[in-house]
Length: 408
Image (cartoon, rainbow, N blue to C red; front, side):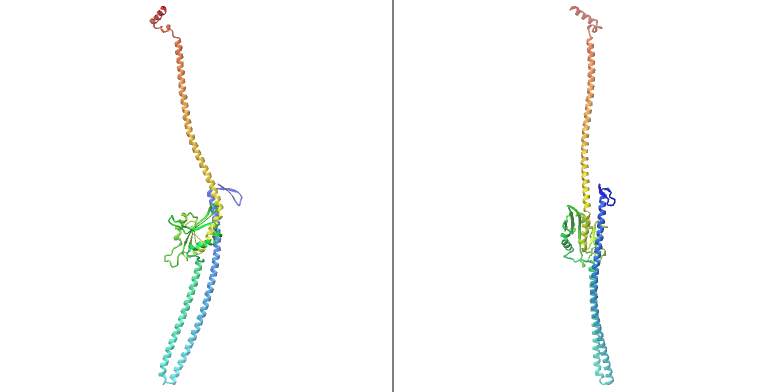
């Protein structure tokens, strides 16, 4: 039992190991939830600001490009209109010339007909060429505008789905570099290395551990998953939850974190740190830009509860000492009871032997007393014996004794 002082009323109350663990869990969960909410709010604001800036920059670039293309299209349209006007004027002139030729010079009609047909053919050809050039220009600039729009959408989508720049050839290298850049300032006493132990049949990517005064207060199993856009079969984050939880349990880690670029269009995973403990306990899914923040959140929450953990271990050690003392006392009691039982049994046997010996001696004494009485009686009878009494019923014997006596 542990005495705990209430910060409100100042009274002391006692809690057992279960109650103490529940209080510890409440404090730890509340601190963790507060830290998560604060970080989510900060990250949400940062993300919103970054998206707003990127959107404004892209819109500005798009508007500038669009205005430039509109000006170019306007210039092309003016050129086309001028060409149409020139063609129209030329057609009018040609018609006038034909009319004048017909009215004024019938003789020259045959000669001019060929020339007119030639000019009309050239005119039609020029007209078709102008139309083709116009359509080609329109299609060209439409294609360029569409490419620009596609590029803007691609940049917006890229900005939304991946707001971090990969600094390594792979996601694992990226995370290792990110951690090593701040290792000595943020986590000088932490262990963060590749998981190379595959003796159980599988292994994760990285393991993070940190201790204080020999007491480990945080441990995280990391798994990194990336996928190229050209990959035929697309995986989901949930496909790796079971294996990650298995690796966490086999390596005795408290938390499991999946750093993933899978499901790039899933808004659930794009919005920040995702808690999937409803499927597997103490498991999270993050994008690479949240790799360092999730370590900081879990580490700070665990460190704040380290004092309670030490007190809990101290209470557990005290209870273990008390248990050992009680076990030793029980063993002593059992040994003493056994020895006492053996001695008591021997004592009872001895008493019974003494009682039996006393009984036997009493019987012997009684027999000896009776023998003594019988001997006394016999002695008394012996002393009372004389010839007269012995020959009382034997007159012949008495006569012989009398003769002997007289003969003497």
